[in-house]
Image (cartoon, rainbow, N blue to C red; front, side, top):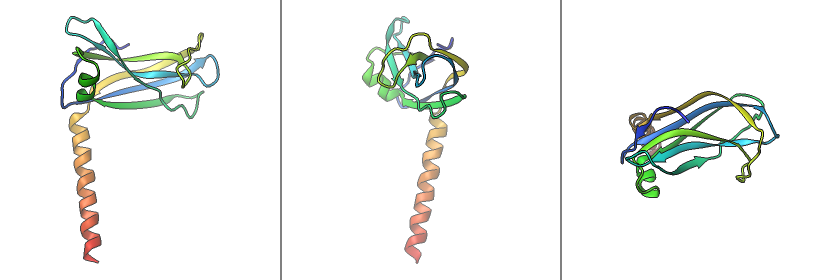
Amino acid sequence: MSRGWRKIEAGRTYRFTSITKVVSGAPGNQFRNGFSLYSEDASPVGFWFEFPTRPDPTGWITDRRDVTGDFLLANFPGSVYLRPVLHSGMLGDGTDLPGVTFAVSVLRSEDVTDSAAAGASAEAAATSASSASASET
């Protein structure tokens, strides 16, 4: 887990980023990426996790996952704060693999609401321009 806590707000988008490498353990091992969720008094509320894709189980892997505050607040009642967390030594089906060791270079959470909105606007503008160009021919 990271040391930092982030307040969950409706209408915001949060990105989890990790850069990790399998150091030792069973082949095919994975980990779950996500956020640990806490109440106002810092009591644990739950976890939001996803399994990353690991195309190269021996090299450094960068994984990014986005989740909205609306989703977290709706699905984890009582959640107020989040922290990025890795749960290591897992297979894709959730089976624990004891003895798996990972090196972690980056474990970060950030609010990407503004950049996500800018990207969506740029994509919409490009689609509109493409449609207008097609209708002129």
